[in-house]
Image 1 (cartoon, rainbow, N blue to C red):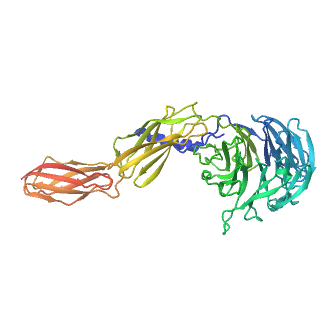
Image 2: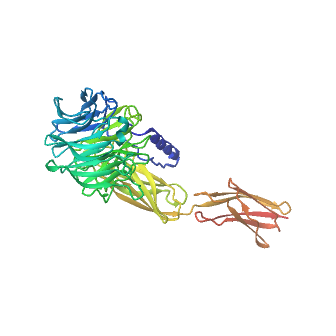
Image 3: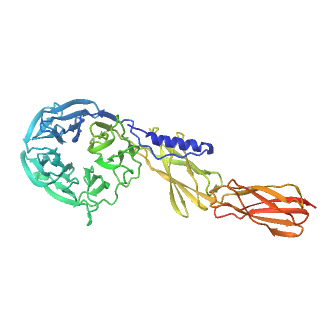
Length: 577
Protein backbone atom coordinates (compact mmCIF):
# COMPACT_ATOMS: atom_id res chain seq x y z
CA UNK A 1 0.00 0.00 0.00
CA UNK A 2 1.35 3.36 -0.98
CA UNK A 3 0.61 5.26 2.24
CA UNK A 4 1.83 8.68 1.14
CA UNK A 5 2.63 9.13 -2.49
CA UNK A 6 6.21 10.25 -3.02
CA UNK A 7 5.51 13.23 -5.28
CA UNK A 8 3.04 14.68 -2.79
CA UNK A 9 5.35 14.15 0.11
CA UNK A 10 8.19 15.81 -1.79
CA UNK A 11 5.98 18.80 -2.65
CA UNK A 12 5.05 19.24 1.00
CA UNK A 13 8.70 19.00 2.06
CA UNK A 14 9.82 21.62 -0.46
CA UNK A 15 7.02 23.99 0.57
CA UNK A 16 8.02 23.70 4.20
CA UNK A 17 11.68 24.30 3.39
CA UNK A 18 10.99 27.40 1.32
CA UNK A 19 8.87 28.90 4.07
CA UNK A 20 11.04 27.93 7.02
CA UNK A 21 12.74 31.30 7.11
CA UNK A 22 9.45 33.09 7.72
CA UNK A 23 8.19 30.70 10.38
CA UNK A 24 5.23 29.87 8.14
CA UNK A 25 4.16 26.45 6.88
CA UNK A 26 1.57 25.28 4.41
CA UNK A 27 0.54 21.72 3.66
CA UNK A 28 0.12 19.97 0.36
CA UNK A 29 -3.21 18.28 -0.44
CA UNK A 30 -4.14 15.30 1.78
CA UNK A 31 -2.03 12.34 0.81
CA UNK A 32 -3.79 9.09 0.06
CA UNK A 33 -3.23 6.51 2.76
CA UNK A 34 -4.14 3.08 4.02
CA UNK A 35 -5.62 1.86 7.26
CA UNK A 36 -3.00 0.33 9.52
CA UNK A 37 -4.93 -2.97 9.44
CA UNK A 38 -4.88 -3.31 5.66
CA UNK A 39 -3.73 -6.76 4.49
CA UNK A 40 -2.90 -7.74 0.92
CA UNK A 41 -2.83 -11.19 -0.68
CA UNK A 42 -1.42 -11.85 -4.17
CA UNK A 43 -4.10 -13.83 -6.01
CA UNK A 44 -3.16 -17.01 -7.92
CA UNK A 45 -5.20 -15.96 -10.96
CA UNK A 46 -4.51 -14.43 -14.35
CA UNK A 47 -8.02 -13.11 -15.04
CA UNK A 48 -10.85 -12.02 -12.76
CA UNK A 49 -14.57 -12.64 -12.93
CA UNK A 50 -16.24 -12.56 -9.50
CA UNK A 51 -15.90 -12.00 -5.75
CA UNK A 52 -18.19 -13.46 -3.08
CA UNK A 53 -18.19 -13.42 0.73
CA UNK A 54 -19.39 -16.06 3.21
CA UNK A 55 -20.10 -14.14 6.41
CA UNK A 56 -21.02 -17.22 8.45
CA UNK A 57 -17.70 -19.04 8.04
CA UNK A 58 -15.72 -15.87 7.23
CA UNK A 59 -14.53 -16.93 3.82
CA UNK A 60 -13.75 -14.91 0.68
CA UNK A 61 -14.00 -16.49 -2.78
CA UNK A 62 -12.33 -15.04 -5.88
CA UNK A 63 -12.96 -16.56 -9.32
CA UNK A 64 -10.60 -16.69 -12.30
CA UNK A 65 -12.82 -17.02 -15.39
CA UNK A 66 -10.07 -18.06 -17.83
CA UNK A 67 -12.37 -17.79 -20.84
CA UNK A 68 -10.86 -17.81 -24.31
CA UNK A 69 -10.67 -21.52 -25.03
CA UNK A 70 -13.45 -24.01 -24.37
CA UNK A 71 -11.17 -26.50 -22.61
CA UNK A 72 -9.69 -23.95 -20.18
CA UNK A 73 -10.05 -24.73 -16.49
CA UNK A 74 -11.22 -22.12 -14.04
CA UNK A 75 -9.99 -21.32 -10.54
CA UNK A 76 -11.66 -20.28 -7.28
CA UNK A 77 -9.23 -19.05 -4.61
CA UNK A 78 -10.51 -19.28 -1.02
CA UNK A 79 -9.29 -16.94 1.75
CA UNK A 80 -10.05 -16.22 5.39
CA UNK A 81 -11.14 -12.78 6.52
CA UNK A 82 -7.52 -12.20 7.57
CA UNK A 83 -6.12 -12.90 4.10
CA UNK A 84 -4.85 -16.46 4.58
CA UNK A 85 -5.38 -18.64 1.52
CA UNK A 86 -7.10 -21.88 2.55
CA UNK A 87 -7.33 -23.63 -0.80
CA UNK A 88 -7.61 -23.20 -4.54
CA UNK A 89 -10.43 -25.00 -6.32
CA UNK A 90 -9.95 -25.95 -9.98
CA UNK A 91 -12.87 -26.57 -12.32
CA UNK A 92 -11.52 -29.10 -14.79
CA UNK A 93 -11.89 -27.97 -18.42
CA UNK A 94 -14.66 -25.55 -17.52
CA UNK A 95 -14.03 -21.87 -16.94
CA UNK A 96 -15.73 -20.36 -13.90
CA UNK A 97 -17.32 -16.92 -13.77
CA UNK A 98 -20.24 -15.87 -11.56
CA UNK A 99 -20.26 -16.58 -7.80
CA UNK A 100 -23.00 -16.28 -5.17
CA UNK A 101 -23.19 -17.42 -1.53
CA UNK A 102 -26.42 -18.75 -0.05
CA UNK A 103 -28.08 -16.80 2.75
CA UNK A 104 -27.07 -19.41 5.36
CA UNK A 105 -23.46 -19.35 4.17
CA UNK A 106 -23.36 -23.09 3.56
CA UNK A 107 -23.24 -23.08 -0.23
CA UNK A 108 -21.20 -21.26 -2.84
CA UNK A 109 -22.85 -21.28 -6.26
CA UNK A 110 -20.50 -21.08 -9.22
CA UNK A 111 -21.30 -20.55 -12.87
CA UNK A 112 -19.30 -22.84 -15.12
CA UNK A 113 -19.23 -23.14 -18.89
CA UNK A 114 -22.16 -25.61 -19.13
CA UNK A 115 -23.46 -26.02 -15.61
CA UNK A 116 -24.16 -24.40 -12.28
CA UNK A 117 -22.35 -25.99 -9.34
CA UNK A 118 -22.98 -25.89 -5.60
CA UNK A 119 -19.82 -25.98 -3.47
CA UNK A 120 -19.93 -26.69 0.28
CA UNK A 121 -18.19 -23.73 1.95
CA UNK A 122 -16.53 -25.90 4.61
CA UNK A 123 -15.75 -29.22 2.87
CA UNK A 124 -15.52 -27.80 -0.67
CA UNK A 125 -17.47 -30.75 -2.01
CA UNK A 126 -18.99 -29.95 -5.41
CA UNK A 127 -22.33 -31.00 -6.84
CA UNK A 128 -24.07 -30.00 -10.05
CA UNK A 129 -27.23 -27.99 -9.53
CA UNK A 130 -28.24 -27.89 -13.19
CA UNK A 131 -26.87 -28.29 -16.66
CA UNK A 132 -27.41 -25.01 -18.48
CA UNK A 133 -26.87 -23.42 -21.89
CA UNK A 134 -23.25 -23.09 -22.90
CA UNK A 135 -21.53 -19.87 -21.80
CA UNK A 136 -18.55 -18.69 -23.84
CA UNK A 137 -18.09 -15.23 -22.30
CA UNK A 138 -18.61 -15.62 -18.55
CA UNK A 139 -21.85 -15.36 -16.61
CA UNK A 140 -23.25 -13.44 -13.63
CA UNK A 141 -24.99 -15.21 -10.72
CA UNK A 142 -27.24 -13.78 -8.01
CA UNK A 143 -29.34 -15.47 -5.34
CA UNK A 144 -32.51 -13.61 -4.39
CA UNK A 145 -35.53 -14.78 -2.35
CA UNK A 146 -33.97 -18.24 -2.20
CA UNK A 147 -33.84 -18.60 -5.99
CA UNK A 148 -30.85 -18.57 -8.30
CA UNK A 149 -30.59 -16.29 -11.33
CA UNK A 150 -27.79 -16.19 -13.88
CA UNK A 151 -26.95 -14.77 -17.29
CA UNK A 152 -26.17 -16.73 -20.44
CA UNK A 153 -24.57 -14.96 -23.42
CA UNK A 154 -25.71 -16.45 -26.74
CA UNK A 155 -22.52 -16.69 -28.76
CA UNK A 156 -19.84 -19.23 -29.62
CA UNK A 157 -17.04 -16.69 -30.07
CA UNK A 158 -15.37 -14.57 -27.41
CA UNK A 159 -14.95 -11.83 -30.03
CA UNK A 160 -18.72 -11.30 -29.89
CA UNK A 161 -19.07 -11.22 -26.10
CA UNK A 162 -19.33 -7.43 -25.75
CA UNK A 163 -22.48 -7.30 -27.88
CA UNK A 164 -23.84 -10.85 -27.56
CA UNK A 165 -27.53 -11.33 -26.86
CA UNK A 166 -27.60 -12.32 -23.20
CA UNK A 167 -30.47 -14.18 -21.53
CA UNK A 168 -31.47 -13.97 -17.88
CA UNK A 169 -32.07 -17.55 -16.75
CA UNK A 170 -33.08 -18.95 -13.39
CA UNK A 171 -33.30 -22.04 -11.25
CA UNK A 172 -36.61 -21.33 -9.52
CA UNK A 173 -38.04 -23.89 -7.14
CA UNK A 174 -35.47 -26.34 -8.46
CA UNK A 175 -36.43 -25.93 -12.11
CA UNK A 176 -34.10 -24.41 -14.72
CA UNK A 177 -35.88 -22.07 -17.11
CA UNK A 178 -35.50 -18.94 -19.21
CA UNK A 179 -37.11 -15.91 -17.58
CA UNK A 180 -37.83 -14.24 -20.91
CA UNK A 181 -35.68 -11.19 -20.11
CA UNK A 182 -32.76 -10.61 -22.45
CA UNK A 183 -30.68 -7.86 -24.08
CA UNK A 184 -27.23 -7.27 -25.55
CA UNK A 185 -23.98 -7.20 -23.63
CA UNK A 186 -22.58 -8.60 -20.40
CA UNK A 187 -25.64 -7.97 -18.21
CA UNK A 188 -24.82 -7.42 -14.53
CA UNK A 189 -26.86 -8.78 -11.60
CA UNK A 190 -26.95 -7.68 -7.97
CA UNK A 191 -29.22 -9.09 -5.27
CA UNK A 192 -30.44 -6.81 -2.49
CA UNK A 193 -32.64 -6.70 0.60
CA UNK A 194 -36.40 -7.02 0.37
CA UNK A 195 -36.34 -9.74 -2.32
CA UNK A 196 -35.09 -7.34 -4.96
CA UNK A 197 -32.52 -7.74 -7.70
CA UNK A 198 -30.83 -5.25 -10.00
CA UNK A 199 -29.97 -5.91 -13.61
CA UNK A 200 -27.79 -3.40 -15.44
CA UNK A 201 -26.55 -3.25 -19.01
CA UNK A 202 -23.03 -2.12 -19.94
CA UNK A 203 -22.46 0.35 -22.74
CA UNK A 204 -21.76 -1.48 -25.99
CA UNK A 205 -22.07 -1.13 -29.76
CA UNK A 206 -25.62 -2.53 -29.71
CA UNK A 207 -26.72 -0.58 -26.63
CA UNK A 208 -26.05 3.14 -27.03
CA UNK A 209 -28.45 3.94 -24.17
CA UNK A 210 -28.14 1.08 -21.65
CA UNK A 211 -30.77 0.33 -19.03
CA UNK A 212 -30.99 -0.30 -15.31
CA UNK A 213 -33.93 -2.26 -13.87
CA UNK A 214 -35.17 -3.44 -10.46
CA UNK A 215 -36.89 -6.82 -10.16
CA UNK A 216 -39.14 -8.24 -7.46
CA UNK A 217 -38.09 -11.85 -6.88
CA UNK A 218 -40.54 -12.79 -4.12
CA UNK A 219 -42.70 -15.92 -4.31
CA UNK A 220 -40.50 -17.41 -6.99
CA UNK A 221 -41.60 -14.79 -9.50
CA UNK A 222 -39.52 -12.29 -11.44
CA UNK A 223 -41.44 -9.05 -11.90
CA UNK A 224 -39.76 -5.96 -13.26
CA UNK A 225 -40.42 -2.76 -11.33
CA UNK A 226 -38.62 0.53 -11.89
CA UNK A 227 -36.44 0.86 -14.98
CA UNK A 228 -34.42 3.69 -16.41
CA UNK A 229 -32.27 4.71 -19.34
CA UNK A 230 -30.06 7.76 -18.79
CA UNK A 231 -29.36 9.46 -22.13
CA UNK A 232 -31.10 12.74 -22.92
CA UNK A 233 -32.80 13.68 -26.19
CA UNK A 234 -29.44 14.36 -27.81
CA UNK A 235 -28.03 11.02 -26.69
CA UNK A 236 -25.81 12.51 -23.99
CA UNK A 237 -25.42 11.09 -20.49
CA UNK A 238 -25.85 7.41 -21.33
CA UNK A 239 -24.99 4.95 -18.58
CA UNK A 240 -21.46 3.53 -18.74
CA UNK A 241 -21.95 0.86 -16.10
CA UNK A 242 -19.05 -0.84 -14.30
CA UNK A 243 -20.72 -1.89 -11.05
CA UNK A 244 -23.97 -1.58 -9.08
CA UNK A 245 -24.97 -2.00 -5.44
CA UNK A 246 -27.93 -1.74 -3.08
CA UNK A 247 -27.61 0.26 0.13
CA UNK A 248 -27.88 -1.75 3.34
CA UNK A 249 -31.57 -0.91 3.77
CA UNK A 250 -32.33 -1.32 0.08
CA UNK A 251 -33.60 2.24 -0.26
CA UNK A 252 -30.81 3.44 -2.53
CA UNK A 253 -28.86 2.14 -5.51
CA UNK A 254 -25.31 3.24 -6.26
CA UNK A 255 -23.75 2.86 -9.70
CA UNK A 256 -20.11 3.02 -10.72
CA UNK A 257 -20.43 4.88 -14.01
CA UNK A 258 -17.15 5.25 -15.91
CA UNK A 259 -18.44 8.48 -17.46
CA UNK A 260 -20.54 10.09 -14.71
CA UNK A 261 -18.71 8.78 -11.61
CA UNK A 262 -20.79 7.52 -8.69
CA UNK A 263 -24.53 7.81 -9.34
CA UNK A 264 -26.89 7.56 -6.34
CA UNK A 265 -30.51 6.66 -7.12
CA UNK A 266 -33.74 6.02 -5.23
CA UNK A 267 -34.58 2.33 -5.51
CA UNK A 268 -38.35 2.90 -5.79
CA UNK A 269 -38.25 4.72 -9.13
CA UNK A 270 -34.51 4.91 -9.93
CA UNK A 271 -34.66 8.71 -9.85
CA UNK A 272 -31.58 10.65 -8.82
CA UNK A 273 -31.24 10.97 -5.05
CA UNK A 274 -31.74 14.49 -3.68
CA UNK A 275 -28.13 14.54 -2.47
CA UNK A 276 -25.43 12.69 -4.35
CA UNK A 277 -21.82 11.91 -3.59
CA UNK A 278 -19.04 14.34 -4.34
CA UNK A 279 -17.16 13.74 -7.55
CA UNK A 280 -14.24 11.32 -7.53
CA UNK A 281 -10.81 12.99 -7.58
CA UNK A 282 -9.74 14.39 -10.94
CA UNK A 283 -8.20 11.63 -13.01
CA UNK A 284 -10.12 8.79 -11.32
CA UNK A 285 -12.61 6.75 -13.38
CA UNK A 286 -15.29 4.86 -11.43
CA UNK A 287 -14.92 1.07 -11.60
CA UNK A 288 -16.63 -0.40 -8.53
CA UNK A 289 -19.00 0.46 -5.69
CA UNK A 290 -20.16 -1.31 -2.52
CA UNK A 291 -22.14 -0.44 0.63
CA UNK A 292 -21.13 -1.91 3.98
CA UNK A 293 -23.62 -4.32 5.51
CA UNK A 294 -24.05 -2.20 8.63
CA UNK A 295 -25.11 0.80 6.55
CA UNK A 296 -22.24 3.03 7.71
CA UNK A 297 -19.91 3.18 4.73
CA UNK A 298 -19.70 3.20 0.97
CA UNK A 299 -16.57 2.17 -0.91
CA UNK A 300 -15.96 3.76 -4.30
CA UNK A 301 -13.34 2.05 -6.43
CA UNK A 302 -11.65 3.63 -9.42
CA UNK A 303 -9.01 3.34 -12.07
CA UNK A 304 -6.41 6.09 -11.60
CA UNK A 305 -2.70 6.72 -12.06
CA UNK A 306 0.03 8.33 -10.00
CA UNK A 307 -1.06 10.04 -6.78
CA UNK A 308 -4.78 10.00 -7.66
CA UNK A 309 -6.70 7.73 -5.24
CA UNK A 310 -8.03 4.42 -6.57
CA UNK A 311 -10.36 3.86 -3.61
CA UNK A 312 -12.39 6.10 -1.30
CA UNK A 313 -14.05 4.76 1.86
CA UNK A 314 -16.50 7.24 3.34
CA UNK A 315 -19.83 7.53 5.18
CA UNK A 316 -22.75 6.09 3.24
CA UNK A 317 -24.77 9.23 3.98
CA UNK A 318 -23.95 11.56 1.06
CA UNK A 319 -24.71 14.58 3.27
CA UNK A 320 -21.92 13.64 5.69
CA UNK A 321 -18.86 15.75 4.84
CA UNK A 322 -16.42 13.55 6.77
CA UNK A 323 -13.16 13.31 4.83
CA UNK A 324 -12.90 9.90 3.08
CA UNK A 325 -10.08 7.47 3.59
CA UNK A 326 -8.18 7.54 0.30
CA UNK A 327 -6.08 4.69 -1.06
CA UNK A 328 -3.52 4.84 -3.84
CA UNK A 329 -2.69 1.45 -5.34
CA UNK A 330 0.53 1.54 -7.29
CA UNK A 331 3.06 -1.09 -8.20
CA UNK A 332 3.97 -4.69 -7.63
CA UNK A 333 2.77 -4.78 -4.00
CA UNK A 334 -0.65 -3.24 -4.59
CA UNK A 335 -1.81 -3.47 -8.17
CA UNK A 336 -2.74 -0.23 -9.92
CA UNK A 337 -6.54 0.03 -9.87
CA UNK A 338 -9.73 -1.52 -8.52
CA UNK A 339 -11.27 -3.96 -11.00
CA UNK A 340 -14.89 -3.54 -12.12
CA UNK A 341 -17.25 -5.42 -9.79
CA UNK A 342 -14.23 -6.01 -7.53
CA UNK A 343 -15.48 -5.05 -4.04
CA UNK A 344 -17.57 -6.66 -1.30
CA UNK A 345 -18.05 -5.96 2.43
CA UNK A 346 -18.48 -8.27 5.35
CA UNK A 347 -22.05 -8.19 6.67
CA UNK A 348 -21.05 -6.33 9.85
CA UNK A 349 -19.09 -3.66 7.96
CA UNK A 350 -15.84 -4.55 9.73
CA UNK A 351 -13.98 -5.43 6.53
CA UNK A 352 -13.88 -4.34 2.93
CA UNK A 353 -12.56 -6.80 0.36
CA UNK A 354 -11.22 -5.15 -2.79
CA UNK A 355 -9.58 -6.76 -5.82
CA UNK A 356 -6.99 -4.74 -7.73
CA UNK A 357 -5.10 -5.44 -10.92
CA UNK A 358 -1.99 -4.11 -12.59
CA UNK A 359 -2.02 -1.84 -15.62
CA UNK A 360 -1.69 -4.80 -17.99
CA UNK A 361 -4.56 -6.66 -16.33
CA UNK A 362 -2.69 -9.94 -15.88
CA UNK A 363 -2.01 -9.92 -12.11
CA UNK A 364 -4.43 -9.49 -9.20
CA UNK A 365 -4.38 -8.66 -5.49
CA UNK A 366 -6.95 -9.02 -2.70
CA UNK A 367 -6.97 -6.14 -0.20
CA UNK A 368 -8.64 -6.58 3.18
CA UNK A 369 -9.35 -3.21 4.77
CA UNK A 370 -10.74 -2.62 8.26
CA UNK A 371 -12.36 0.80 8.72
CA UNK A 372 -12.21 2.03 12.31
CA UNK A 373 -15.18 0.95 14.41
CA UNK A 374 -15.20 4.00 16.71
CA UNK A 375 -15.22 7.73 16.01
CA UNK A 376 -13.84 10.29 18.45
CA UNK A 377 -14.60 13.97 18.96
CA UNK A 378 -12.36 16.80 17.72
CA UNK A 379 -12.46 20.52 18.58
CA UNK A 380 -10.63 23.79 17.99
CA UNK A 381 -9.30 25.40 21.16
CA UNK A 382 -7.95 28.85 22.01
CA UNK A 383 -9.19 30.69 18.93
CA UNK A 384 -7.13 31.79 15.94
CA UNK A 385 -4.29 34.32 15.90
CA UNK A 386 -2.39 35.94 13.07
CA UNK A 387 1.01 37.42 12.38
CA UNK A 388 2.31 39.94 11.62
CA UNK A 389 -0.06 41.97 13.75
CA UNK A 390 -0.85 44.36 10.91
CA UNK A 391 -1.95 42.44 7.84
CA UNK A 392 -0.74 44.03 4.63
CA UNK A 393 -2.12 43.52 1.15
CA UNK A 394 0.26 41.44 -0.93
CA UNK A 395 2.35 40.14 1.96
CA UNK A 396 2.33 36.70 3.64
CA UNK A 397 0.02 36.34 6.60
CA UNK A 398 0.06 33.39 8.98
CA UNK A 399 -3.15 32.29 10.72
CA UNK A 400 -2.48 29.90 13.58
CA UNK A 401 -4.64 27.70 15.76
CA UNK A 402 -4.91 24.42 17.62
CA UNK A 403 -7.03 21.32 17.00
CA UNK A 404 -7.50 18.81 19.79
CA UNK A 405 -8.93 15.32 19.36
CA UNK A 406 -9.95 12.44 21.59
CA UNK A 407 -8.86 8.86 21.12
CA UNK A 408 -5.52 7.48 19.93
CA UNK A 409 -3.11 9.36 17.73
CA UNK A 410 -4.10 9.09 14.05
CA UNK A 411 -2.00 6.99 11.68
CA UNK A 412 -1.70 10.01 9.38
CA UNK A 413 -1.58 13.68 10.51
CA UNK A 414 -4.96 15.40 10.59
CA UNK A 415 -5.69 18.12 8.05
CA UNK A 416 -7.68 21.33 8.40
CA UNK A 417 -9.23 23.24 5.52
CA UNK A 418 -9.16 27.05 5.36
CA UNK A 419 -10.95 29.78 3.42
CA UNK A 420 -10.72 33.57 3.31
CA UNK A 421 -13.82 35.67 2.75
CA UNK A 422 -13.40 39.30 1.71
CA UNK A 423 -15.22 41.83 -0.43
CA UNK A 424 -14.53 39.79 -3.56
CA UNK A 425 -16.00 36.53 -2.22
CA UNK A 426 -14.74 33.34 -0.59
CA UNK A 427 -11.34 31.95 -1.56
CA UNK A 428 -10.12 28.39 -0.93
CA UNK A 429 -6.75 28.33 0.83
CA UNK A 430 -6.29 24.57 0.68
CA UNK A 431 -5.34 22.39 3.63
CA UNK A 432 -2.83 22.66 6.44
CA UNK A 433 -1.28 19.82 8.42
CA UNK A 434 -1.98 19.54 12.14
CA UNK A 435 1.26 18.90 14.04
CA UNK A 436 1.63 16.35 16.81
CA UNK A 437 0.95 19.04 19.45
CA UNK A 438 -2.29 20.02 17.69
CA UNK A 439 -1.05 23.31 16.23
CA UNK A 440 -1.42 24.30 12.61
CA UNK A 441 -0.54 27.26 10.42
CA UNK A 442 -2.40 28.49 7.37
CA UNK A 443 -0.39 30.71 5.01
CA UNK A 444 -2.16 33.33 2.93
CA UNK A 445 -1.41 36.47 0.96
CA UNK A 446 -4.47 38.76 1.09
CA UNK A 447 -4.76 41.05 -1.91
CA UNK A 448 -7.72 43.25 -1.00
CA UNK A 449 -8.00 46.03 1.59
CA UNK A 450 -10.52 45.88 4.39
CA UNK A 451 -11.80 43.02 6.51
CA UNK A 452 -10.85 39.43 5.69
CA UNK A 453 -12.49 36.62 7.63
CA UNK A 454 -10.61 33.34 7.89
CA UNK A 455 -12.62 30.16 8.46
CA UNK A 456 -10.84 26.95 9.44
CA UNK A 457 -12.69 23.63 9.24
CA UNK A 458 -11.92 20.10 10.27
CA UNK A 459 -14.14 17.80 8.22
CA UNK A 460 -13.29 14.70 10.21
CA UNK A 461 -12.24 11.30 8.95
CA UNK A 462 -13.40 7.75 9.62
CA UNK A 463 -11.81 7.93 13.09
CA UNK A 464 -12.70 11.48 14.13
CA UNK A 465 -15.92 13.43 13.88
CA UNK A 466 -15.94 16.90 12.26
CA UNK A 467 -15.21 19.89 14.52
CA UNK A 468 -17.23 23.09 14.67
CA UNK A 469 -15.72 25.68 12.34
CA UNK A 470 -13.68 28.51 13.82
CA UNK A 471 -13.34 32.03 12.35
CA UNK A 472 -11.02 35.00 12.73
CA UNK A 473 -11.34 38.47 11.17
CA UNK A 474 -8.30 40.49 10.13
CA UNK A 475 -8.14 44.09 8.88
CA UNK A 476 -5.91 44.24 5.81
CA UNK A 477 -4.17 47.58 5.28
CA UNK A 478 -2.04 49.17 2.60
CA UNK A 479 1.56 48.11 2.32
CA UNK A 480 4.11 50.70 3.51
CA UNK A 481 6.63 52.36 1.23
CA UNK A 482 9.81 54.31 2.03
CA UNK A 483 12.08 56.84 0.36
CA UNK A 484 15.69 57.28 1.49
CA UNK A 485 17.83 60.20 0.22
CA UNK A 486 21.60 60.64 0.16
CA UNK A 487 22.68 64.27 -0.33
CA UNK A 488 25.72 66.40 0.46
CA UNK A 489 25.58 68.78 3.42
CA UNK A 490 26.96 71.65 1.30
CA UNK A 491 27.27 72.53 -2.37
CA UNK A 492 28.52 75.40 -4.57
CA UNK A 493 26.07 77.48 -6.53
CA UNK A 494 28.02 76.96 -9.74
CA UNK A 495 28.68 73.21 -9.42
CA UNK A 496 25.10 71.99 -9.10
CA UNK A 497 23.69 69.31 -6.78
CA UNK A 498 23.29 65.55 -7.14
CA UNK A 499 21.02 63.64 -4.78
CA UNK A 500 20.73 59.84 -4.93
CA UNK A 501 18.00 57.81 -3.35
CA UNK A 502 16.23 54.51 -2.97
CA UNK A 503 12.53 53.77 -3.09
CA UNK A 504 11.13 50.60 -1.46
CA UNK A 505 7.59 49.24 -1.53
CA UNK A 506 6.42 46.23 0.44
CA UNK A 507 3.47 44.07 -0.48
CA UNK A 508 2.36 43.39 -4.01
CA UNK A 509 4.76 44.52 -6.73
CA UNK A 510 3.89 47.80 -8.41
CA UNK A 511 2.30 47.56 -11.83
CA UNK A 512 4.74 50.20 -13.14
CA UNK A 513 7.90 51.86 -11.86
CA UNK A 514 7.22 54.55 -9.31
CA UNK A 515 7.38 58.15 -10.51
CA UNK A 516 8.49 60.56 -7.75
CA UNK A 517 7.56 64.21 -7.39
CA UNK A 518 10.47 66.55 -6.51
CA UNK A 519 9.91 69.96 -4.88
CA UNK A 520 12.67 72.52 -4.22
CA UNK A 521 12.28 75.16 -1.53
CA UNK A 522 14.77 78.05 -1.12
CA UNK A 523 14.74 81.69 0.00
CA UNK A 524 13.09 82.70 -3.27
CA UNK A 525 10.11 80.33 -2.75
CA UNK A 526 8.93 76.88 -3.69
CA UNK A 527 8.96 75.21 -7.11
CA UNK A 528 8.38 71.76 -8.59
CA UNK A 529 11.23 70.16 -10.51
CA UNK A 530 11.00 67.45 -13.13
CA UNK A 531 9.73 64.12 -11.80
CA UNK A 532 12.11 61.16 -11.58
CA UNK A 533 11.36 57.53 -12.39
CA UNK A 534 12.68 54.86 -10.06
CA UNK A 535 14.93 52.28 -11.69
CA UNK A 536 14.19 48.54 -11.58
CA UNK A 537 16.52 48.14 -8.58
CA UNK A 538 14.73 50.89 -6.65
CA UNK A 539 17.38 53.61 -7.10
CA UNK A 540 17.00 57.07 -8.54
CA UNK A 541 19.10 60.26 -9.04
CA UNK A 542 18.12 63.96 -8.86
CA UNK A 543 20.33 66.59 -10.50
CA UNK A 544 19.67 70.28 -10.02
CA UNK A 545 21.33 73.69 -10.51
CA UNK A 546 20.38 75.82 -7.50
CA UNK A 547 18.98 79.23 -8.36
CA UNK A 548 20.25 80.99 -5.20
CA UNK A 549 22.56 80.59 -2.26
CA UNK A 550 21.59 79.65 1.29
CA UNK A 551 19.57 76.73 2.63
CA UNK A 552 17.79 74.66 -0.02
CA UNK A 553 15.36 71.84 0.84
CA UNK A 554 14.49 69.09 -1.62
CA UNK A 555 11.35 67.08 -0.87
CA UNK A 556 10.66 63.82 -2.75
CA UNK A 557 7.15 62.33 -2.63
CA UNK A 558 5.31 59.27 -3.92
CA UNK A 559 1.49 59.52 -3.59
CA UNK A 560 0.77 55.82 -3.13
CA UNK A 561 -1.75 53.64 -4.98
CA UNK A 562 -4.69 51.35 -4.24
CA UNK A 563 -2.59 48.88 -2.25
CA UNK A 564 0.37 50.99 -1.07
CA UNK A 565 0.77 53.90 1.30
CA UNK A 566 2.46 57.06 0.03
CA UNK A 567 5.85 58.16 1.32
CA UNK A 568 8.05 61.25 1.44
CA UNK A 569 11.63 62.25 2.32
CA UNK A 570 13.55 65.53 2.46
CA UNK A 571 17.18 66.62 2.27
CA UNK A 572 18.51 70.07 3.27
CA UNK A 573 21.66 71.42 1.61
CA UNK A 574 23.53 74.66 2.26
CA UNK A 575 24.49 76.28 -1.04
CA UNK A 576 27.50 78.59 -1.09
CA UNK A 577 28.06 81.41 -3.59
